[in-house]
Amino acid sequence: MATNTNLEWCIIRLGEDVNWWVTEISDEIRWDVDGLGVIDPRQFGHLLDLCEPLRQHGFDPELLDGVFFKFRIDMELKGGHVRLVRVTESLLDSDESLFALPDILDEEKGPYADFLDQVTKFRVKLLNDLIDFEHNLTIDELEEEIRERHNSDFIDGRSVHFFAEINDILEYVPDGFELDLEDEDLRTDDALTDIPEIEENDEKIVEDETMRWDEDEEEESGDDEGDDDENDKDEMVEEPKPKRGRPRKK
Image 1 (cartoon, helix red, strand yellow):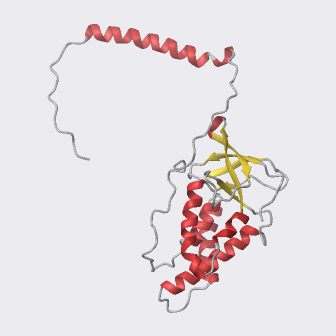
Image 2 (image 1 turned 180 degrees about the vertical axis):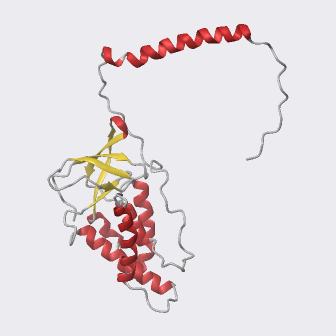
Image 3 (image 1 turned 90 degrees about the vertical axis):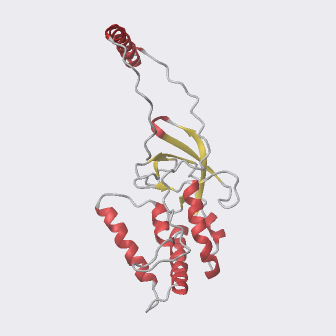
């Protein structure tokens, strides 16, 4: 069960890969923010849908609450950062849109490691039931292929986000095979969809003389443009307006 009492809040940012990454966390002793990702509400809903077919093979979705620490949005900060605060509500039953941080305090035998083992086992069972392999797929084969994908990311200096790590297992199909029941719309290109509005920080920055430089420059630039516009109007010769044509089809 995810019960770390020192974990109260974290600050996240949206990366270029459209995933949320932790930049600061309340429990700096136990958590290393380097490459630490958070699963957003839409991503978690997608993973939950992918877990649904595994239920008939023995997977229990209720265990998810013990695998993840839950957070809700507190406020928006400067520079596109967002502050999240810890909650104790259930990921499955909450009316709020919650973010999820896997419990990786024990990477070898902790709740998240056990969860990955379970979804891998049940995914292999599902594939063996639905696909007529010459030889049954094994857990080792699935893990080896996914490990190769992730190793290429590490070599390129990219961290593997938790969403990608879980998603790759739950969507895994061996090369040369396919499942009709798979939903191909798997990416979360718009990570802000279905996420509640963020309250802006009420703290206001006191302006000083150093902050007026851009504003003054814009005003001077605007005055120059106004003078140019007046000169252009004097030199313009009225021409007949072109006839409107039909919009070009895209």
